[in-house]
Amino acid sequence: MGNDAELTRWVVHGERLVYDNRWIRLGLADVEIPGGERFEHHVVHLDRAAIAVVLDEQDRVLMMWRHRFVFDRWGWELPGGLIEAGEDPLVTALREVEEETGYRPAGLEQLVSYQPMAGMVDSEHILFVGRGAELVGTPEGEVEADRLEWVPMSEVPGMIARGDIWTSGTLIGLLQAQVWLNGRGRG
Image (cartoon, rainbow, N blue to C red; front, side, top):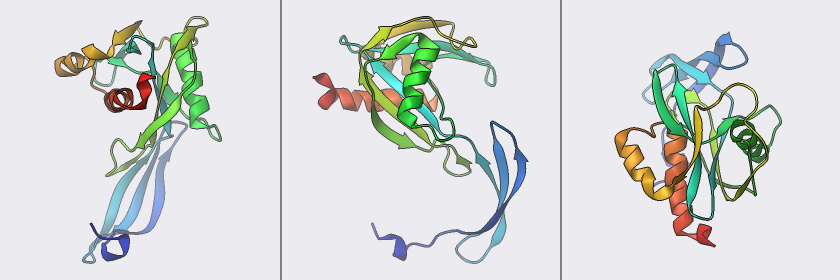
């Protein structure tokens, strides 16, 4: 592995906005790749998202059974949502868990952040994990899930293999939570 000074990188000469609304910004970036070829490349900008893995003392994870209309597909997902402008991602994760599930986490810590489609989409996802939650009400606002369940972590590999867990945030969150459990999360 070399340092960044040894590597060649794409040069961005600018970006023009093609479409913009509350949910998505689409741009065309004027880029030049190593070797001198210059062209326009689509770039999608989405707000950052916070996702939470909430575990209980029996190593069960709080999950939501949801339908995603874009794919006309059902699956188990972790609670999470978009980070509002100026909002701390931890505050978002705590708020989203309570709004979507009715549970208030005892506390969360950051696990990892990642970009789900780095080649052309800018949408940082920040994953949190915590142990313990108190039921404080019912889910608020729009219907987020058909049902909620505390799913044993031991069942997750089979659920992934069957395709019941298929979204990137949930897959990465559960895999990282397993690493966390195998380390410091047992206490």
